[in-house]
Image: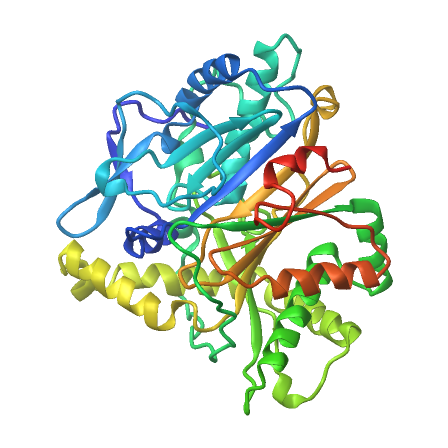
Length: 438
């Protein structure tokens, strides 16, 4: 691996970053949050010192988005690095990068350390490398000996060029690509809350118990939870009493790194869309799980995903599009996303998987949390992450209704799982008490 050239002042946005930057507006940004709830209270002065030591190792997270004549681009931010803030009740507030807002933020509250990332910078896989490294540096500053293993980067080493490559461009090819046409799905929208209110509900489940439940249905944990979410949305649509019911579909992000070798810390994901069509009849939970299982296994293939990558990247190289000025290009992308971007799916479900750390860190972290910020339309998103024997599942959205998450967690209970719930909604326990979840 070769070091990243320190003289490089800017670089192109990847395919996903172009979209997230184009559809950003004053009351919406594609943000997500990872949190680690530690076993001891956080020392904010030590954590700020750890942030200052860690960030130079990750130059791709210390950038501004600038608008060129034809495209947005990243420019290195040579100003002060991100500062630690005391946490807020409503996380993932919009980033106004036109006003030079930082594209990454750090928060603390009692035992919780949180990081919020604008999705144009990186996907969850890349951001977790930074977060894990930061936690290791913080714990070293607190006097613990933590090795650089399990994905923790050595902050004394220079950043590597491969970590900031555009992996989409690397794996696009010139062969035939797939059609991107998707049928319209049921829009699981709700009543918008006042700006900016993000309702967050978290459920905590034993990983061992969840794995056993999923295995009893012949599915992985991701397939099992996705199926229960589909069923919950199907029930909601049925209650609304539509004369014609639409398919219910999920956007499930897939990390491409296991299929296309890359150490990039930028975006490198695609989505698959398991779907159930209620017009074909009623489905039992077992039937939905089987549908999800086979859809995921059929469509998560190297060949199909490379075809989708090629389709996405090829749009950037259409000569007439390249010559359109950036403001018109972004307007067109935003309009297109507004009309069709969220049309093929009802909501998003993401599971970045197990948060693995060195043995020396395991007893110092109680559990992990993940929050997807608001959707482009008023709907609720779902995300999950596991650490040790704690699987944390979050529903977050700017809608008043809570029927989808309520049905989801009730189904887990009916499946024999013990679920602890916490929320920042007024009628529930405040979200900040989630650190007490067992």
